[in-house]
Amino acid sequence: MDQEFDLNKVDVLRERTGLSYRDAVKYLEKAKGNLVKALVLIEEDEHEQGEIMTERGREVLEKVKGIVRKGNEMKIKIDRAGEPLMEIPVTVGLIGTVIAPYLAIAGAAVALATGHSISVRHSGELPEFKNGN
Picture (tube, one colour):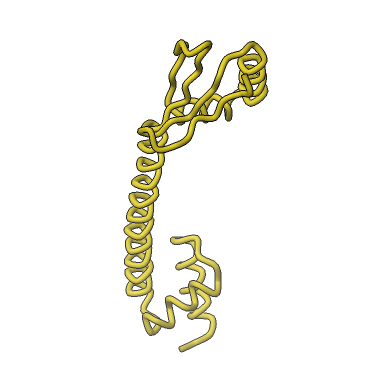
């Protein structure tokens, strides 16, 4: 094949797909210089990559759902003299801490300083964490 002719094919492939010169040449070599076949190969690879990304996205989503589910099973409980004042899922507490960390720290400090107890429970499996009162 003529070098200029190959360069024209590479340029056409790059314009249509946004590939680098190296990748365009690689696909043209796979397609034995056939520009249409190279475009088909690129399309097939993009489709395959899309399927892989979709599957990975599903896996990540399932893991996040599992973490949220576990976080919702665990509760942060605030008591004063044995009387329950508030009980929230750990997930909500973590989201609040991420959004307003200083407010969360200040709230916990005030609660402990005023004799409140803060505990974390998971179906009775985790120990209760309280202040020294």
